[in-house]
Amino acid sequence: DTGMEFTALGQVIVLGLVQVGGLGIMTFVAFLAVTSAESLPVPQMLAFRQMVGARTPAVLKRQVWAIVLFTVLVEAAGAACLYACLPPEQDRLVKFGWSVFHSVSAFCNAGFSLFPDSLVQYRNNFSLNLIIALLIIAGGLGFVVINEVHDRCRNKKKSFCFNSRIVLWTTGLLLLGGTALMFLLESGNALAKFSRPEKIMTCAFRSVTCRTAGFNTLPLTDLSPATVLLFMFRMFVG
Image (cartoon, rainbow, N blue to C red; front, side):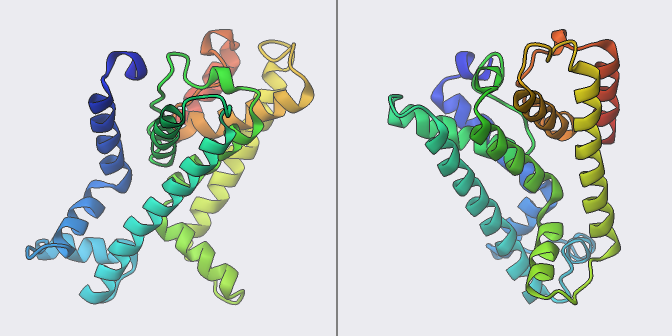
């Protein structure tokens, strides 16, 4: 239990490891390389340049800084939004730590929570569910795809590369399909006592999280075998 068994320092260490994993080992090592006198071996440098679409070492350096800056800004924005969703009577320092931890954990698709039941107690908090889901999706898409989406919004004539088209279409179909299937399978079972908006929100959130992140707003033991099989397929794809 991360929230109960670890000290504050332990939680910071866990969060640091999550952040490194979210950036990716190649990005992390490349960042260390471009900020120091050392450089990556040529094969790894060429591989990373191809991955981020950088034609020259100078462009690579800018791209690495852009990835790190993008990550920090998105996680900071997510933490600020989560902070605003929490009850105002809670201790500010506790709210700040909770918000930062869950923003980083969501964006890095780690799924670590500071509560034993994950986010079950926030099942009816629409804003918090939406923010966590958007952070997970943004982290899952990755910098390269989001950068292309940004460029496309600025220039309508610019087309997506094959990789980005596959990622965007597959992500959209999996999210919508997973939401619809869980709604059909669980409306009369685990979600029977939920209102229609609560059913849709719960199914959409689970559709986002079961593919990559692991956060939970509904106990898995309440689900039917068919839904569990659906989740297994989604996790396998993720």
